[in-house]
Image (cartoon, rainbow, N blue to C red; front, side, top):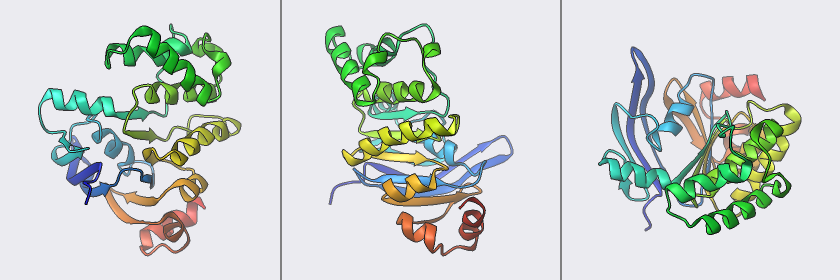
Length: 244
């Protein structure tokens, strides 16, 4: 049996006296689309950031594609190259065009030749519907367009896993659709995805598994339709009664 592409065991993380993660354990298979839901402050984003070592757990273990993240610095850098992450805020370089934002990391981190990086970036900008915006700067783009550039930038590293941290929550409602469509395309192509989201319809349509987190723990998990329609835990039901 193939090893899971993500394996997390007994993950704990605190910030001062605030316990944010309290023993998270999960395996994620290649090709899975895991949606993570829960109230604000429940540890969703911290969990995601532990998967690529943007946050260092206090204890527990994260293994990405067979590489433990508690190993040496080389391990962490190698894993980060394989794990793309898109944030709530777009974090684009304001002084670089969309094309330059997408080509930078493949050249610096992957050692890709400039011409090859440019060809890949142009193809990815076309993939996210922004072929005509390659020479535009972030301030010339809408929030939805900036977020799609951020997705293209993450994909330019040809990651094995994509992490999405509430990527539509900073967008105007009419711009959410265009970003979710790009994510649906990625999902249909077989990308392994972990998505922290408030978009329940997206979780239902695209997710292969849904995690409900509360107070730093995974309270319930299962197929999205089952968790959303027939939650087994009282805490899950109380949360869904408020948001659905």
